[in-house]
Length: 77
Image (cartoon, rainbow, N blue to C red; front, top):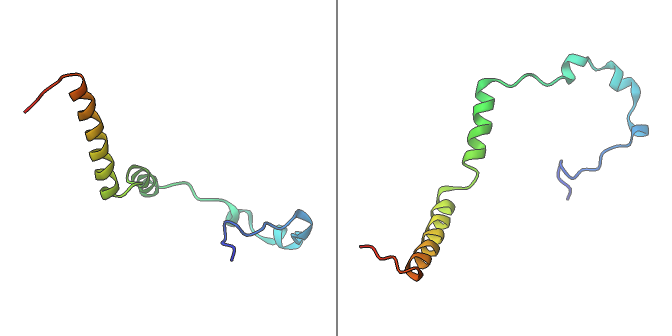
């Protein structure tokens, strides 16, 4: 089953010109982004990975750094 993103797009010959010309141009225009939508986009980018995933990644990186420090002879309490 194809999703909306995978749905085949009609060729230009299949688009009836009467429907395209009859639609008001303002309805086709996208409204400018508001502060709320811009903030939502930034937060979505910042929190792309869930917290448990980030915690696991940090733990793996910490183990890697600790191994390198031990090989270099660095000790800590």
